Length: 432
Image 1 (cartoon, one colour):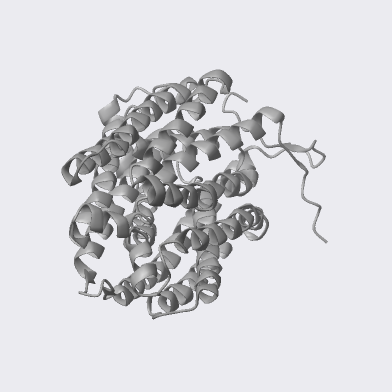
Image 2: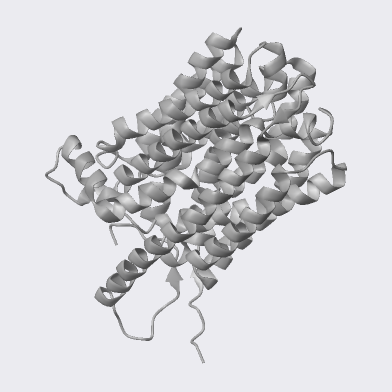
């Protein structure tokens, strides 16, 4: 009979930090995701092609990827709170420019600026999580933070769509700016410095630090898996609203309801997936979620005109797999870097995700074409491509899981202590 799991204790401050990081992710993810449901509106109002819309999406991704690579060498040399504030401020400015963009060219420029700052924020947040929370509770923490993805659907996207329908497509971006200013004030007033990693001295200059991070085989395996993990969202989501309206047969007014129902289910599934990943293992959950995701993705992308209730059910099932994959892969990948490399690794990993996602979005814009009646052609081909990448990531994440398991076993052996221990604290400050 196995011993009972040690009780996990989160302090009030730790709970507040988890909530704050989730809210930060909410604003950044919403800024990216709101473009997808606005796709049908932007194609018409800005009189642009699907390929041009693909560039609007990928411009953010390419600039975000470039910023991550440029800052990776410096990411472990500063207090993570200060880095977070700097890039979050730039993100707010970029989003404001999106909110006042008068045409396609200005919007494209604004998305580049937003990506330069916003694309780095996620990696800083994940570095903070890895610094502050132990491996055995990281799935739970990631599960809560990843609910930002779902919350952006439940709260942000429907509200954004209603505002866009009533006031124009600029309104959602201005709403994000207003919320982000409040979040930024909370960072300033409440978050403590996150600088224990600065005690791990390194003689490498930023360029050497970057070179060291991109040359380690175990790190490279993580970057390779991230390349394919990013493909699904960037290929399918940019054209999701146009596909739903023109191919599945729902109306512009019904679209917020679809996102809301899907998001509510994802808010419930995210924390559950986090706890499940800590209980049964990060990789087993990733495996099951990927197999499920492959099946539902192919089904969804081959649908024609479909009743609204069926679309909502299939979307819930699809995003259940997506949420479980995001939570389990995020927790698993967080175990790859050493403490002194976390900022650099997370920054490069974010860059790889954004750049590969940008390429995927650009390719999707070239594959999908809009017929005279507005319907999207060859969307099913995207589904098969995404399913294929899921199959490959199952193998790649198995190898990563093997590496991380060996690393965790070695660390546990070094830190072995008497069997009788007090409850495990969720906090894993590097200074302890």
